[in-house]
Length: 254
Image 1 (cartoon, one colour):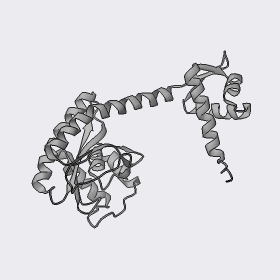
Image 2 (tube, rainbow, N blue to C red; image 1 turned 180 degrees about the vertical axis):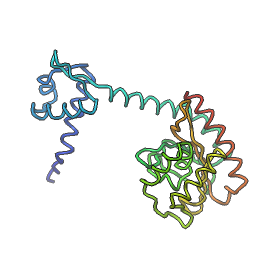
Image 3 (cartoon, rainbow, N blue to C red; image 1 turned 30 degrees about the vertical axis):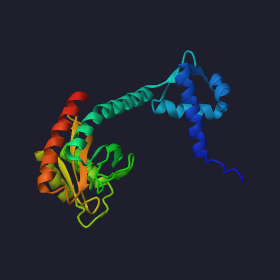
Image 4 (cartoon, helix red, strand yellow; image 1 turned 135 degrees about the vertical axis):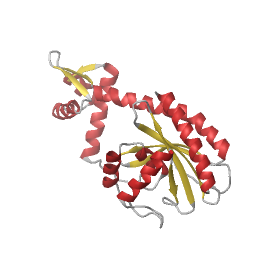
């Protein structure tokens, strides 16, 4: 079988990752050593290092003619630690919510205008809502997305909704930016957001934003269930409990 040739873009990425891995291990290196250790040619190494330097991923020492890892990589490392802290702190609370309501509990963030599910604990009931971790979903139709939007300044939420794809996923999906903003105002006042069969027919979801001390939402918790069990009374009970749990988690995160 003939080997499929990688694209230039993938080859450049591999070279850049090799360079960053070397710098992370050895702290600082000259271009000559980078080329010797990674096999990257000098012209390619200079182009890659220039791009990485512009993005803050490497720093150049003019006097010693050496390169080292830059502040952007340290920022990514802090973000990874924060994400791990979030999941470690959230898991016990998610377990409590799962046991209390016997419904599926999720935690997610908004990234590039989409909801990303970080973790989920499924209901033990035969008829249940199921979510796959790392799936990307819409901010306009999910309780997680709406909860996070409701915790943002209105103008920022409006800008995100305007730029986002807003497909009609069900007959209940709200697509109008103004109608969504009206929803967010209500969700902001009550402390939790609701997806009323807007993302999937037969399923309702309630979500509340996790807001840290700086007033920014970092994620959201949600409980999803079939419409037969998630009636208006259950929505209010779950919403109140989620709001308290999300507030506790926000305080723990500081």
